[in-house]
Image (cartoon, rainbow, N blue to C red):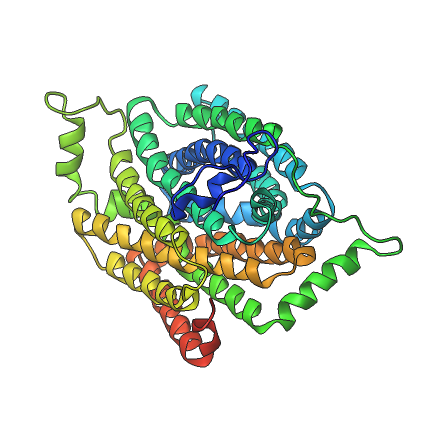
Length: 443
């Protein structure tokens, strides 16, 4: 496909790119892809380092879940407003201002940790702030993809590449955080995250000629009616409603495995991980001098998830417009909880790391394809509100699920918590596959 060179205009360029990367022919999307990749690496560094910090301060799985729960508190009320906001106000401005606040949040956390004054309640307060900003920013970010690629022709590819960059960061971020935290402590990981936000802020400032997809309210219309119209569309469209319900069940019962990863890395798999840790941290033959070697197994496990997710995302980005997305979505719905059942029953670090690779593959099949199909099914004027329901469901149920997973882990055990949640998710995935065959037929 040959198009005009528009390096400075924001339109597609002449360069012929492999199908997997065709969305990068758009100038604005190239900027976003570069800046967001750098920023997300920092975000995952902070996520992993914060888990290590909270577990070090408290030794409690419930405290890990509480961090997720606190970020949930502002999510639901703000998500209803933010979806309407994304359909009415410049999405770029919403994202830009949100990134600036996130930078300040990371700097405060870095200062408290490096100064040795950090307490767990500091983390709770900062998690609340980050959750508030995320609730406002996410619907705009999701709906912004169409603007950057100027329509739906490259939308599936762009969403696949978004997932690839997210999961590349998910692979690199924890690995880098594991090294940084092991060598210098958690504070420097938070500081590095604050610096990476500059990349995405610069990319947003440099964007040109974005379409005006947001529409101010008509005279006489109220924001409440605007929000209600989006809600009515979601609940009346069976395909969209079922897709969101799949994400809700998975986010509440399966995805919280991530919250308990420090428990698995240290308590369940720590003994079997000793040879790996010694190989990396041994003073005589190792690669680095480790202050906190317990961070390495966690970084490796999370990185394996990220590697599998990148592979899966690139496969999705390579799909043609006629691919059977519904079939692959169904495979992801079933394979994701199955891999978690295997992980919950494992006591071998090496086997668990391999399983985590396939967990990443199946997680992306489920979530990227659900995201893609939701955006394809949504009219332009409703996309911000539809994506606000999606992000509210995903983030809200995942964070609430993190709390329940932590409580169940403290009550029973971490493997039981992950296993029970994955088992129920698997049953619901089978129910949807049988009861709603139209989902499998989606393209």
